[in-house]
Image 1: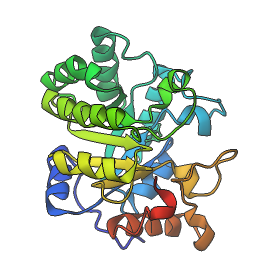
Image 2: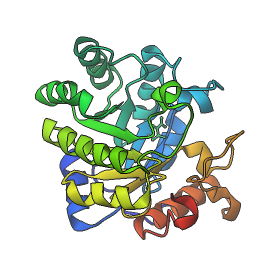
Image 3: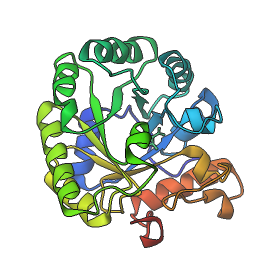
Amino acid sequence: MSSHNTTGRVTVPKLKEMKAQGEKIACLTAYDASFARLLDNNGVDVVLVGDSLGMVIQGLETTLPVTMDEMVYHGQAVSRGLDHAFLIMDMPFMSDASVEEAVANAGRFMKQAGANMVKLEGGADQKELVATLTRLGIPVCAHLGLQPQRVHKLGGYRVQGREHDVAERMLEDARVLEQAGADMLLLECVPVELAEKITKQSKIPVIGIGAGNICDGQILVLYDILGISVGHIPKFAKNYMAESTDIAAAVNAYVTEVKNSSFPSAEHSF
Ligand code: KIV
């Protein structure tokens, strides 16, 4: 049984309040109802149906082939497992190619899969889309830093924001997207100092993955914390099964370390 507080539904205002109060937000990905239920029962605040499912469920090399139908299928399963945690769903590659398509697809996540928020990759160029979704009442998490859907433009999965001009652009992207109405930012593979600046300048929660422990919360891919991912394991991932007797204990250990800021340590940061 969880040692964490799991009463009441997590909401957008609740997540903002957690940031304001300095309570760290523990997030994990999930792709099915059983794992969603286990995370929900063990103190996870936010569950993401990530398009990482293309890699960890489907065995693909990138997230690019993941479809809207596949996301809806997994979103529906995960949403059935949640009573407490907040559900975010990833807009898959090309589902936001135009504002019109993005609105239809985000609406589908909210109506058919029970999403509470959609996550989309991109910077200030997504301003109009974020403003439109916000006007329609669809909460948005903007994904900055390493954007896996742009892997072919980037030439690989690398830390983003080490150079001064790229860092300045990311700070500006974060400002513009918050102004456009984004309710959350996610920073992937960003140097700790830059993640700290973005977290401090933002009123909305900033969730990190490979972005240091100053962020308002952390997210990891579930299979990475369970030590069952194969191939290259990113530096920011930690296998919590190494010191746990069962999956619930591993999830609890992750939540505890996020809440007390001991994860991520320097070893898992850039
Ligand atoms: O798709 C995903 O799981 C993600 C996380 C890695 C943040 O975007």
